[in-house]
Image (cartoon, rainbow, N blue to C red; front, side, top):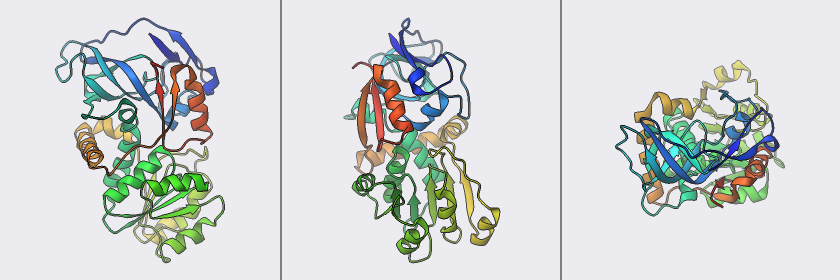
Length: 326
């Protein structure tokens, strides 16, 4: 089978595709023939050694996948060979085969295609944990989503609307904002052309948003936080901008506001039962048509580096997937 390998820390162009032996699952593990693998911003950081954890070299990146069970190890009873499954793993998805722990595997809902299945776990899992669990967004509240046209941003918009909230989407181009409106955004802000604080003030009648969802960091973070409403919750998702902002603590005091960290991977590991409930709610919303992953591009395995470069350059909207069989 073929797999993408990271042999040294570096940019996507340093990745290689090589032939490797077929994978054999150990006890409690499931081997999957990968049909699609979701691409996420952490993949760009992991190959550079800049993420929260550093795998041992060499390794295959990629953390979410869908496919067909190839074989199961001793003690696995939840799935069997031939089952269509979704899996989240710490690595190994950018390959024609992957081995994952059985607790990281869930059945694909009937009628779901492989690309959609590979695009739901990390982005929607992150946004559900952030918006529902960490922010406790309530019906009638207002949420501002920065970087709203990205994978987690669009997921946050849809989840906010499913909860009955008003959602303001901020992004850097009219094309991206059009996608945000297609996914339910009530108001849009082009922060490349508009003054962010003034636009937020106008969109909230001066009250400020109850929740701010920020996967970007960088220059817009302080302006957004200065606009937050009383008892607001500022969700720290990540730093796609590349710059970790430094917020003055007096702002939290003056607004009675909270800065809330969101690390879905650790949450899923530490609280698997809670994560399972979240995933079931997400699948229910998908069946009802309330959420639908926006897949803007598909790449063959040989073009994985290009997919990551496009992700790093913030050229993508929604999700992109790798199709190892193509």
